[in-house]
Amino acid sequence: MRVKLSIWRQKNPASQGKFVSYPVEVENGEMSMLELLDVLNEALIEKGEDPVAFDHDCREGICGMCGFMINGVAHGPMPATTICQLTMRHFKDGEELVLEPWRSTAFSFVKDLVVDRRAFDRIIQAGGYVSVATGGAPDGNAIPIGKEDADRAMDAAACIGCGACVAACPNGSAALFTGAKIAHLGILPQGKPEEDHRAVRMVAQMNVEGFGSCTNIGECTGVCPKEIPLEVIAKMNRDYLAGAWKERKEVINAIAPVTDWTFEEK
Image (cartoon, rainbow, N blue to C red):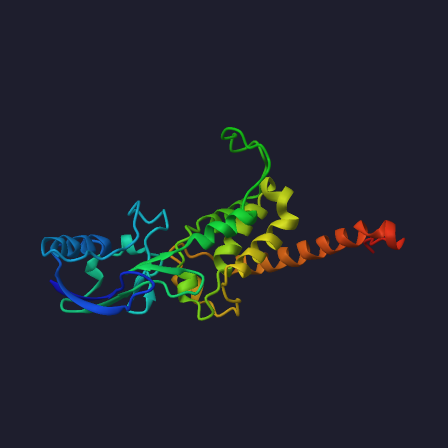
């Protein structure tokens, strides 16, 4: 089996990029897309050419490092599948596959199929943590949590931060990623201490990074390899409104001694 890879090649952000075609022999249908790129890179190195740069790490679909567009679809045509788990048996002999990096203002370009996704790290740093002393792993029944809440938290925690949601969104929004990080902490009791301010801080950082706004198109969850549900965005919006309202009350009450007026719940 032979396929033609049309790959975006660009040495750095300042240089001119273009698609370059490479015919590649697929020795085994169970080869992953990244293994096929390994085969291509070995051939390029032998010819003294620059290998294709792409992100990868665990190659087990759990780290979130790999990711690029295949024929205009983030992570390729198979649903709930990362690039490193996408095998060549899903493609036809002689098929042309167009590979290009995530396209997003917030993900600055690095080289070939590599982009800088550290904006996600800064969003997490803004509020994606808990202050409680967790210590060692507690007994599973030590803290009573309803199964429905536990399932919702685990579904959100499955997010691996690959960036496919941003690449697929016409607005370049990171709402699904941010919502997942807010939800998996806020649903559980360990995440309650920061709940009031977590969403406000993380959404503010998301906006600072230059991500677009969410308009509920749904492309993000459609390409998410972990099938994060859209409901995490709804929770993010609710938590943001609640947190912003509480912070407004805190500001008003802070100036109460000067104005001789306080804000109280009705």
